[in-house]
Image (cartoon, rainbow, N blue to C red; front, side, top):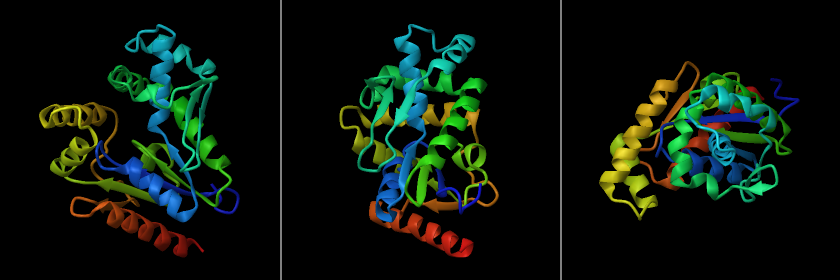
Length: 228
């Protein structure tokens, strides 16, 4: 990927509760970059699978829906939306039923291949000078050639505390179990707690939100200067 032809590609990976979505969006906003939430595509596909009354556990049936998966996502940090066909699913894909189906769908190899190509296409097309792409295995599978690759992490305890603060309707115990379950499910698909070669780790355990943004921006600026 030529840095002259395409936007500067910033890939941000990390476990559930690491803050990668909110941090990535804030970093994109601060730098005037586009923002791509890749997890939304898996959720939107899960919504589509359920909408079409297909069993999420049936890998062949899920894969058969891919050619007709009409997916659109907003890449402006302040104009975020997710659509399947003409249906706005921005809020619907955060429902518990969708969350419960996502891991099974993400394990289907055809799904990962199809969506990886989709992410690359969307990222290359943003009008801004750069794009912050966040999600699982972005630094290793989706964009191993990205100019900037970051693993945003934090201790399990810190991630649980943050997730509990976000989700006030559930007990801390429930949130902790969901986070551990998500980590277990994700670890079957991808190695996400240790940085691959060439990936910079930003540990936000002892950083607040603004400090985490600054740390990520510093990594991007350092890499950008070395590319110029």
